[in-house]
Image (cartoon, rainbow, N blue to C red; front, side, top):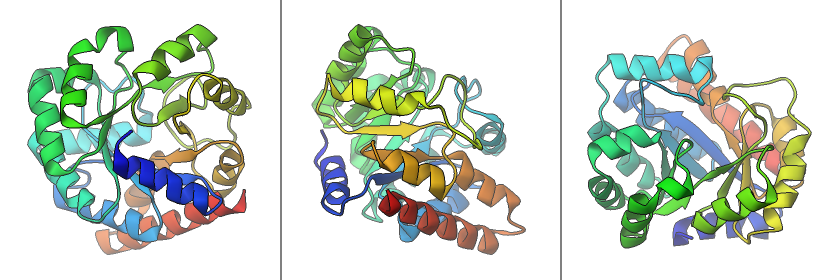
Length: 266
């Protein structure tokens, strides 16, 4: 695992809580605004940051994140802008990953992306649509540049599949709480706890649960059994619902504080 990621999970464990992982798309509402929003998330208590790389065919993204990504793309957000957001976020001290579908990475150049991400201070990449069987060039590039790989497992994953995915994972394991797309939900699947248990049986990597998590109560529930809790759409919605950017920054920081409190309630 990347040392910064390792330290973040170890610190949370020492404090008797799960790590809070926050997602936010680069370029929304603008590139500079996304940097400010992420800084507010970190100030509020987010331990680890996932920066979304905007993509025109987001298979896993729900309507809230799709709306934000479409705005970022309409404003011309490019991979170079994403890397600028990574550098600014890494400067806060929070371990910073990119969440990206495979096509933009392949289009940019696998080796170039890994090189530039490492230079910007990024520690890892979450690739929701890339399977380990198709990841050989990515595995070589990330190994060469010390970039942590994060693959996903789902409630439908068999024990054999869990073993294959976790063997190729060098960061944390992203456990999807349900089958479907991102987005805040009033209740979460009861399958998530079982998935974490089954995943831990085949790996010693930290396991973080995401998809649909939006409230402190949901965070507290997941923090009982997972090493990390991932929240994305709720942060984006806080910005969408705010009347202006100063209010958005306050809303994002307050949400982060409340969610961070949830990790300690478990």
